[in-house]
Length: 494
Ligand code: NAP
Image 1: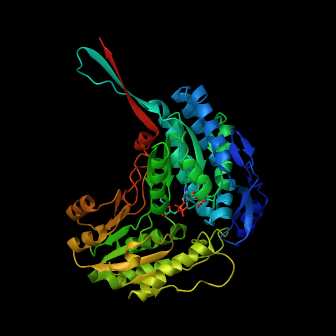
Image 2 (image 1 turned 135 degrees about the vertical axis):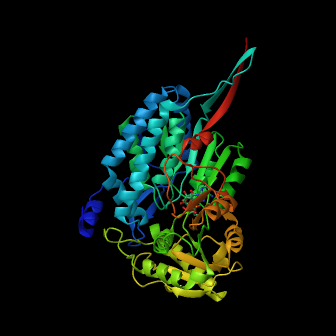
Image 3 (image 1 turned 60 degrees about the vertical axis):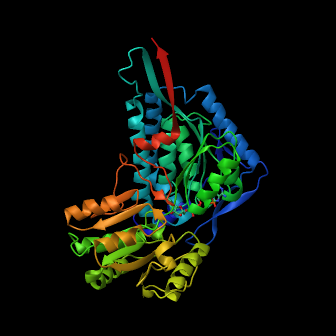
C-alpha cells in the first residue's frame, strides 16, 4: 500500500475485533455493557468492545489459573514454548499491515510508523524471547562439601498486565513474551483507547499454538476492569506501564488485596543535554526534534526537556525548530505524515493547558500556538517553549505530547544539576565529544537509560526502565524475566 486512500480502504475493510479474548475464544461482557473505541483522527467511534465486569475478570483469572495448574503451557519444555513464540513472531510479520492499520484506527499513530517501527519491534520481541527459551540455566553453587543446593527459577503463576495506549503492541509484547516464556499464564487489560490491535494479536497467539486460557485479554475501563484485575486475590504479580498516578494506585490495590508483586514502568521528563562540543550539532538538532515529535510526543522517553549550553542555545534552538517544522502533521493513513493526532481532544486540551501555564509563568512561546486548531480530530502542531526555568511547571510535569521545554546551562555542573532536578528518572540524552565528560555525566545522571550522542536506541538484549517516579523495574532483556519468576532454593544434604 502506497497511498492514503489505499491504506484507508484497507483499514475500513478489516473485520475489527469487538469482543474479549478468553479461553481461546471471543467473549462478551457478562452484562453486555460496551465502550466505544474512538479514532483520534475523526473523533468518531470505530468499534466498541466489552466493558468487563468484576465477574468477567474473575472468569479470565480463573481460566488463566486453570491453564497454569494443569501444565498445558507451564508444564511443557522451554524449547516448545520458544517454538510457539517464534511462530507467533512469524504471524505478526505476516499480519503487520492489518495490525498497523488497527493501531492507526484506534490511537492515530501514522500507519507507516506503526508498521515499520512498532510492528517490527513487536515481532522482534516475540522472536528474541522465543530464541532465548532453551538457553536459560539455573544455578548450583560450588564448594558445598556436604550438600547440593539448587537455586531454581519458577514461574510466578498468573500475571496481570495493564498497558497504556501509546505503543499498544510493543509495550504489551514486552510483558507478554517474557511472562509466557517463563511458563506463566497472563491476563492483559489494554487501554480503553487501544484494545483492537491487542485482541488481534491474542488471536494470532492461538494460531501459533498457544493453548487456550494462557493469554486472556479483558477489555474495559481502568477504574473498574483494571482495578478489579489489580485487586484480584488470585493474581500473583502485576506488571504495569502507564502514568505515575495510576501506578501509585496499583501499589495501594496490591496492599489492600493479596500483597501481589507490582512492577511499574511509569512516566518521564527526560532531559537532552547538548554541549557546544557535540560531535555533530545538526544530527543532535534532528534527534532532539524527533524525540519530542515522534508518536506526537506520546512517548514515556520523549526528550521533553532540552538543556542546551548557553553559548550555542540560540542557533541550536533555531535548528531544532526548523527540523520540527519539516515534519508534517496530518492524516495518519497518509504515508507522508510524520505526526498524527494525539489520543483525544480531551488529551489535547490538557497538553495545551501545560503550554499556556508555561507562558503565563514567564516562558516564551517560540513555536506553535496555545489554541487548538479547527476541525475534527485531535490534531496539534508541536510547541516549543524557551526560557523555561526550574520553577516552571513545564520543567517538571510530564505533558505526554509534542511540547519541548528549553533551558540553557552554563557548564557541566549546571547541566547535571538541572538534569537531575526532576522527580522522574527514565531517560537522558547526552551530546558531547568529550569522552571523560560523557562517562562522568552518564554516571551522575539519575536515570535508567542514558544515550550518548544518540537517543532512544537499544536492542532486546538491554533493559528498559527507570528510577524514582519513572518506576522501578525493567522491560526487555533477560532481566525482564526476574519479575515473572520467583527463586526457589532446594538444599539436599549428602
Ligand atoms: P494511564 O492513564 O496510566 O493508563 C494506563 C493503563 O492503566 C490503561 O490501561 C488504563 O485504563 C489503566 N488504568 C487507569 N486507571 C486505572 C485504575 N484505577 N486501576 C487499574 N488500571 C487503571 O496511562 P496512559 O495515558 O495510557 O499512558 C501514558 C502514561 O504512560 C504516561 O505517563 C507515560 O509516560 C507512561 N508510559 C510509560 C512507559 C514506560 O515504559 N516507562 C511507556 C509508555 C508509557 P484506561 O485506558 O481504561 O483508563
